Length: 193
Image (cartoon, rainbow, N blue to C red; front, side):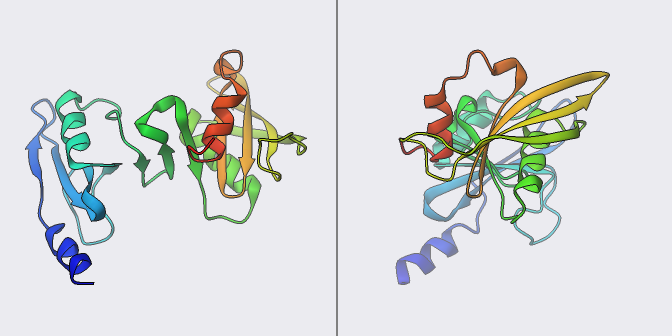
């Protein structure tokens, strides 16, 4: 108990802070429990979890500092394992091993959220169709596959979403021919194969 208390006290400090030269936005790397770290952008505006404009979690302080060193401030940094605001997770920090978790009970709401945070907030979902709910082992027993039709910028998109419990894996239309089922399985299981 004393070790946990000491760790909580130690995580109140900031590992490093800097400012992006081109837009003067503040970047902060702050410690998290378990020697993990969070890379944050924008001013801290309160005590709510984070309170920054955006934030990405890393498995170690070193990983967050390396990501900061490589990041030009555009888009997202690389190597993160959790993006708290969107509930996206990346196994070993790899973009090709990304999945989305949701606490919402309605599967359709989970799927809509997964499409928007993976493919773009400007996607307008037109239809969600259940394609299969009978996957052979080693897929988890309750895995389901959906086809999601959406519209964006005068284009129609047809993406696949594999869903298991609170987890969604989106295979965007452009990636259908290159994504292997083993990759989908790994993401559905959160890294355990």
